[in-house]
Image (cartoon, one colour):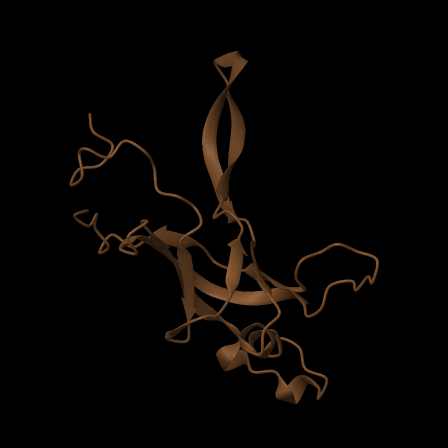
Length: 167
């Protein structure tokens, strides 16, 4: 069976370096790394009265792992603005419960720049924000990296995005 229904000649999977992230209706500048979208379901073990020698397994709660995003420091304030919705030096009154959670999209593109897959992440909020990494004049790091960690309530693949015809 072909791995690709439209482009049956294609044998290799999509590359992981052509992607974009969108929230508040716009693409966020400069994101260079997004951690894996990962979920795990707890395994419940139960034993039945007549079969004490082996447990039965059943699914329990499903948990979604946090998502970490990184980018080189720029003048775009999207990471900081969102992080400030959860905590602000001005106090609790400056924290916006209305704007704290956002739905985001993570989009993957083929080498021609065609959208091939989109995942929708629901009700995400910033739990960790790193505005500036450790600075070291003796270090060899290429760029200063800004980082956020998002907690969320799950994700799903956008089934409206279908495989494009490659030319």
